[in-house]
Length: 400
Image 1: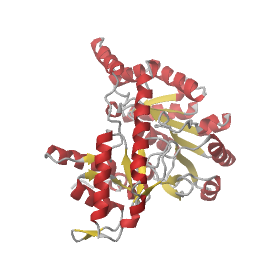
Image 2: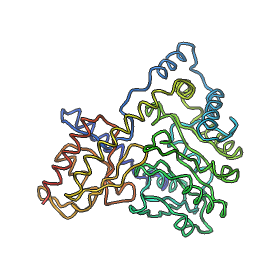
Image 3: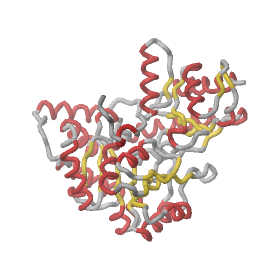
Image 4: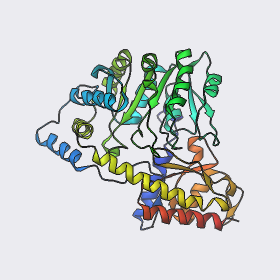
């Protein structure tokens, strides 16, 4: 038998992908499953992007390109940062990667040594701690408060920093909570980071999905020093409905980007060349589809909150999301109750029994560091949302 390393044997599989796979399996068997667990837009990739990929293939653009990315695409990413974030980057500071997850892995590989501590506000995206542990780092979770909208405070950040701290992973808009930090809140956190010369991995994948007149603000915008300390991770998956195309990117100080590019040259070489041409079309083409999808998510969010407001009297609650396309549904009032002889003892039990009894897939909050919630995505049609929420209500009423 082949002996596995500690690096891979200790990694937990992605529960979001596992729930989606289980949901797909049930659907394939003819069951009417509603999947709130998936973290991807339900829209088809816009036609101009698909056409660009076809055109690239027709022109024979199917060869290797530079490991860190197609020069034209890196230039387009720089132009995006300038237009959207007021940030000036050179193409040599950009690395194109195989999705946002890959960009995060690259960033942690470049900064985190064995035994280094990485601060992760909780609830968090479930991939963060797994990547940190893979490289020998130690996740340090800082529990945020529902009363504060799941936001990390400067005082909490200061208290979590030790001589071993190498990085803060910061996510706004946040998956799974939908939290969006204001410019003032980000500047207050940046002051702590600058004081301690703390590297920030800023995951901004959902920047185009903010609501109620709010505006995305990158921590790299605070000051030249903060920009130097920040590695921004972004991509085309969520904004352009390109999850399966697998393309993300990062922006960092030049020496950081150069080292990451060298690492990637050995790990994967370049991202799929055809996908890079598609992403180029996404970033440089008409942005109306981005606005249309964001508008649809905003409408679904309003309708989901309206329905959930009617469930508060029965014990379900939520924290109002301001961005992304998720709601953390607080369901701990039902823990200790039973269905078919099975006692609900946490979010995992709640999610599994919800799927078994009502054919509704949701992601247990324990995966994100909050065992009192389940995460619901509203990246599905409104009829599905309405039916799915009704089934959740029926499930809760069936518990005794």
